[in-house]
Image 1 (cartoon, rainbow, N blue to C red):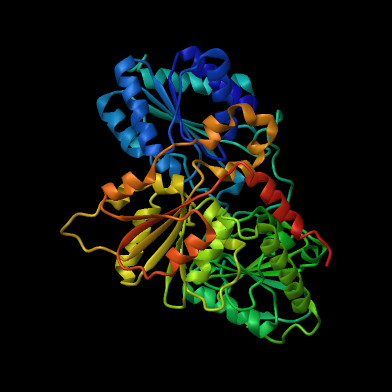
Image 2: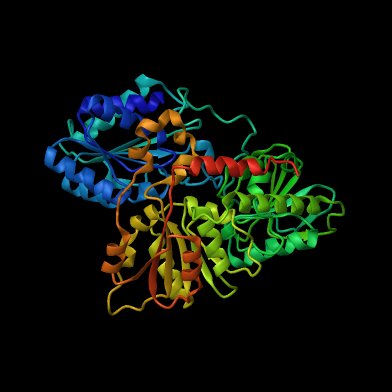
Length: 540
């Protein structure tokens, strides 16, 4: 938090208005900004769409004559600022972009929402810098900030314009202490494509170690390979929703089991695709006592682990002969019963996800929105008949999901159902605009509307200690009435106020363009997630 406080004090001294787009990695900055606005009068504006935030900051700077700042989280959030940065560069408007980032050791490891943000704006910025809460001190951070401030205002060059400060923040994000560097060997060395990295000789899988197959975001072909290997080796299949392997014997609620005594017994992980969804999976891949075998079809690796091998093929020499699979199957069934019992027939994000899964058949296509919807799908019952699932998991942003779903519908010429949250929907509401001369997809958008960012309730900033400023910089309620918006674009609108109503609407065929709004609360989301996590720890 010291780094965030240093930067916010600098913004206050400069008299800069600030526009914030909420996110997880930027939590320390958000908390410091909210406190400065509430206690000391800092001019703060909050917008859920980074592209809008960038242009809002541009307008503030144009009219006030002062440098304005825009603050975002990591990943695609930063890329959404490019149009505003380009305009500021050509207009000579002083604009400071502060982007939160993952620490450097997480680069090229497949870590969620992690990309190379340094230099992302190219020649459009007058200057750029990178600072980290693991390096330097308040004086060093303030020096870099002042240098960028001078560059943006054109004090020496008489050429004002945009500048970029990339801020690497390590966990714990919101404690009073700055994050620590990773323990030696805790994450493995980042691996990039290089000659000889991928073994062309098949990895031969024996039954001598307790092994699980972990299927992350993957193509249908890779998903089938993961499912087939699990079947041949009699191995537990831990499949994320977009793995295209999640069917049949896949273990429901696997992430709730990974940190139980059963999960601690894992000795080897065979990874297909790009796992992105949960911290238990991340911790599994960082374990130094677990061998990780990454199966890939390309030279680009999206996983890093301390004991890692890479192969294009895995051959099962002998299936597991003990009760390893049976124990995982029994644990998964126990957790499944617990999930259903806990959720009941209430209309929640989790039960809406389960209803969507139940409504789809083998010929259907599902698009999963980021944030809570895809995690709710991860806890939904495993479908008996697998269907194609797509999502933007490369950087796991919420942007562009409506348009992505439309593109998938047009390319497949199949009916598509998309499950997304209200902020994801509003972030790409322009995707509803389809001209009268354009071909239209058969597309159903199921919008779970909890009026804000419920995922933050489940993270550290959802703790009661941060309740004072939570709603403004994390909860971000919008109060938007979706019906007039949807109908204004010419789409059909329906609203499901109960699980029975939702099931009835989902039973109808997808014939045009429609939005089903599912209103749910979010105040009890944190408590519900905590109860769900406890299910894995409950003895059978």
